Length: 125
Image 1 (cartoon, rainbow, N blue to C red):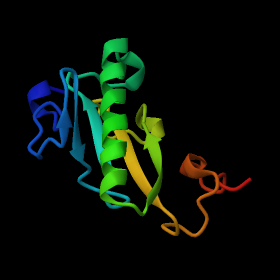
Image 2: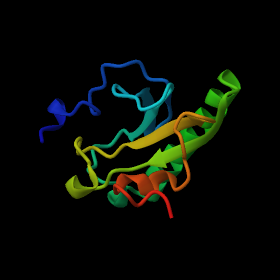
Image 3: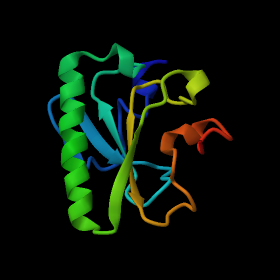
Image 4: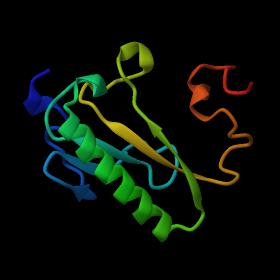
């Protein structure tokens, strides 16, 4: 992919938070209210290819955004943090991005197992 065509290299959405190496935007297809993406500024396809400084910058935004969201919405009682790494894992935009998904009591019938739900029938155990 040419970087000028990458939706994350040239974001058109309002940046919610930003630091030297990363930024956050609202997800265009949110699974819950206030679902955000945290994205490294460098065009890199996969989380496992990030440099430690980028991971640290991403984590700073994740923690800051988590606090801001919980202060804004007292119904947020948990979060899922997700990364799709590779096509077989569901990645569709090949610029690394981390999903920060706020969770609220009752938003699904039974949240037990959380991210295990990416494989149908494996969430409950």
